[in-house]
Image (cartoon, rainbow, N blue to C red):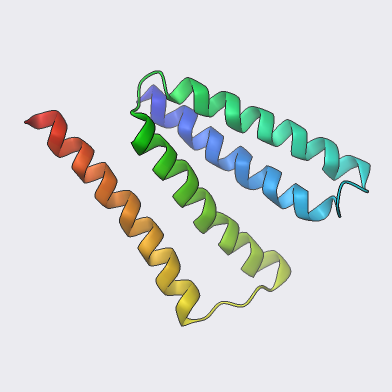
Length: 111
């Protein structure tokens, strides 16, 4: 359970850092630029801690998949990025893939 808490912190801080990366405007604005370094630092440190208890393939799939989906949502909500059928299908596939990886990992643990 502790691994999933660190993974959640890693995902949230990665999405935060990516959002700040957009706001930094190519690292020309000081505050968001510092927030990028801080956010990614927390993200990678938390990811390394979650890997003590979670398999690499599962943790990375969840981290990248959910992080990507949340980043798409942030782009849509904050910057008015386009949301259409393709976006919805893509997010569905990402989340579906993460769920399948998680189920496969549980199946291997029980056999």
